Length: 253
Image (cartoon, rainbow, N blue to C red; front, side, top):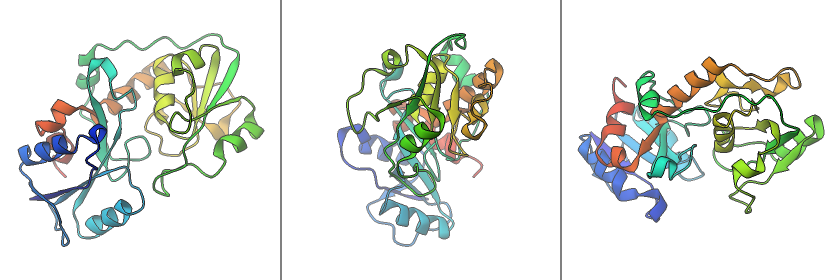
């Protein structure tokens, strides 16, 4: 089995940790892999132009594609160094997550805040509008959503420096997202979420925006189930470097 690691050498990408983990999982890590075969693996960051073409080529040859991204609960969540990792696409928007059950999330002992009973604001989480056509938001999505549903737009932290999310959502009664990490964090804070991407990873704990302004989802059990599933797309750098993340995600492929 061979692997091609296309992550950048930038510190936040931890390229060497991913290469070490692939090797620990039994892959021969190559600098080039022009003729992938079934059993081979490609690792990319998101699915941008350039890497998207390589990913499509790998898939057409029967090889696997794993897509890394920032951790939806924060790259330094719980004092560690975290990434998201899923098959085909980013975990937040239709990536393949191999659900291993409740044990991973429950073992972390994380308590989700009860759903809020009050709040005055509708907050729309703006997107950057980048990435693969299957996952990125439409042009002017936040502005179009605001005209239709009202509310305030929170600028994307990749484009500006908004206040810390918890502070900015202090008075929120609901959050509207295309598909974002901020919405995952809002759900953990007990803020109901409306999502517009059809394959949003936390859809089970939210409600589709097309149903707005009916009553938002406040199902504690459904929200917990969504976090339990998402946990299998969230990995520490140590779990990546040891090969554990790859072993889980690629098992029974």
